[in-house]
Amino acid sequence: MALWGGRFTQEADARFKDFNDSLRFDYRMAEQDIEGSIGWAKAIASVGIITPQELASLTSALNELLEEVRQNPHSIAGAGFEDIHSYVESRLIDKVGDLGKKLHTGRSRNDQVATDIKLWCRAQISVLAGSIRNLQKKLTLAAEAYKDVVMPGYTHLQRAQPVVFGHWALAYVEMLDRDFIRLENAGRLMNRCPLGSAALAGTAYPVDRDALAKDLGFDEATGNSLDSVSDRDHIAEILGCAAISMMHLSRFAEDLIIYNSGESAFLDLSDRVTSGSSLMPQKKNPDALELIRGKTGRVYGALMGILTTLKALPLAYDKDMQEDKEGLFDALDTWHDCLDMAALVLEDIRIRADRTLEAAKGGYSNATELADYLVSKGVPFREAHHMVGELVVYAIGAGKPLEDLTVDEFRKVSDRIGDDVYPCLEISSALAKRCAKGGVAPEQVAAAIQRMKRHLGI
Image (cartoon, rainbow, N blue to C red; front, side, top):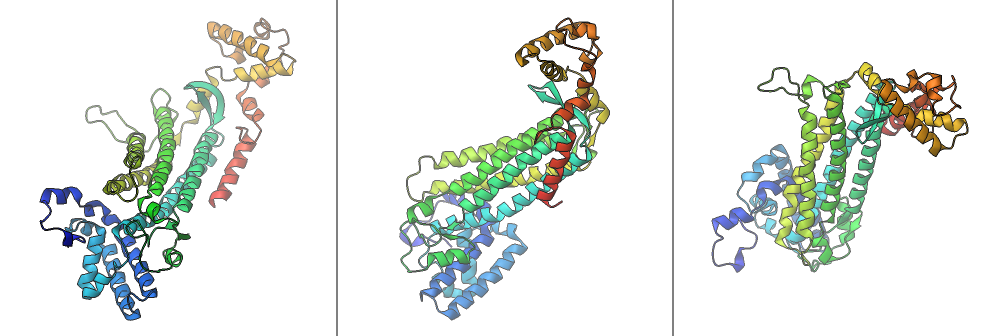
């Protein structure tokens, strides 16, 4: 049953119906549509549009329907209705007869769908936040397990300075913490209820919209009916959160793909998150990580899609807005799956400490320590920087690491270098010196791990 047939003298073309109908995807908002309908029934009962007895009948029938859709939500998709609103209304009429036709009094699908999608997004926030926290916990525990494993830190994909694996893992914990905060902020921004805005000008009945909003778990009602039915900022907001977080997950995946490569061989991934080649028997491919990296573009596309859809829409509601859901549903599913897959990757990961240490010793990553040593001897840093650059060129030509140069070789650039330079060139010294907050010194890494464990309740 269509909700709008009286004005029309011809049936809709079947091709238009297929093009127009949205139940195949907006069935996912069935619970929210029913919850919003229960809230609206209470609101119109409060102003005498329906009696207390009718409210009880409607509420009972809607709760019954709610249990039914929870049992098998996917079955709704093929039920043949235009959208989730017409499905719920038709099923309600099946249960209570003509009383069900009263429910839509003073309400429009415009404010109804705006409310449904906000309720749906809010429900996803708690699920997604849980997955973020779970991944943060896995990363923090990995940081603790490998807090002493020395590895090279990189800039420009060139070995730069030594770090430890625990410090690397904590970098992603920090990124994810920002993702969590962004998601919380998105929830606060969408916590105003549009129900009661009707089609665009507001409902014609004197319902207490703030009371209705609180009944549905919102902080308050929205302030302008035109904006209320045309606002999709909350979708762009949560997709923005998803896009930024997927960028973080993609960087995480890229790092591990590089570390897992035969050239690096810093770590081994579990058979549970890798696959083989149909041709080459020896292959073990990091497909879980590659898919995380690949799916990032899919989430970016959803964000760009909604921004493009909204960019030139006149007030108030336009059918273009039906395009807000498929990208949203897919993007949040994808984000959730990628968060959980990243956590799974960490479960059985094995770090090869011998390989990471060997790599950290290469690439002249202790050059900065030598420059700092010269500074401690009174050489201005810029001069020290130049001197060490010359020594690196010499050491490369000699095929030696800096720590294997003799004092006489060091003194080719500065007579201030003595035997006391060698302890400064050790990796342990390089790490220990980075003792300011956020640095890679062992005590700082240990403190950061404990701080994050308390933060995450581990």
